Image (cartoon, rainbow, N blue to C red; front, side, top):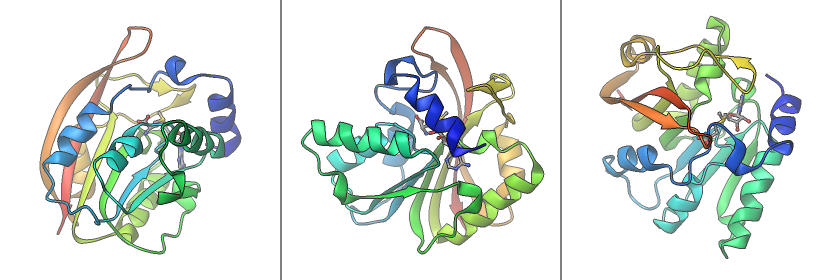
Length: 205
Ligand SMILES: C[S@@+](CC[C@H](N)C(=O)[O-])C[C@H]1O[C@@H](n2cnc3c(N)ncnc32)[C@H](O)[C@@H]1O
């Protein structure tokens, strides 16, 4: 996975024509509402792309927000969108990095990932993700991950994915993270097809 691939993917499409776009990140907000977070708790959206989650979290008065993505184009699009809504993009920490190479400088109370972990198809990259996750969280941190489910598509944006059940995610994370809750949720793409997702939340032991 390269930044060139994702920059091209964002450059050649509009928000409305990306399979993963959501007008409102409903599931994310439903899960997040169940975590006892304070407004100054640090939250990171990894592989955030052009998700409107950050817009919603600003609206909800969270003050320590970070969005990480491999695509500078995606991050620029969100900054422009925030400005168009009279929201200050400078209140967000923008991190343009490959997640598997990233060296976090701090920890977060909430790690949110909708649809990036499933692009890591080798055990090596998946373990790298876990290493970064461990370096980004402390005991008590919450983790929310959404991936394509075993019934979901085998690829996205012309890239292969690994499909995960909640049980698979739990086995992968169980040593360091306590399973909280899962949900099987069907995402409707902008053109009306469906994609089955596994959502699962965890709390670091
Ligand atoms: C399917 S999109 C999901 C975007 C967003 N989370 C959402 O829900 O709309 C996957 C995102 O992950 C980003 N991405 C892919 N591989 C990545 C990596 N290795 N490190 C960081 N971001 C990555 C892509 O640029 C893209 O924005």
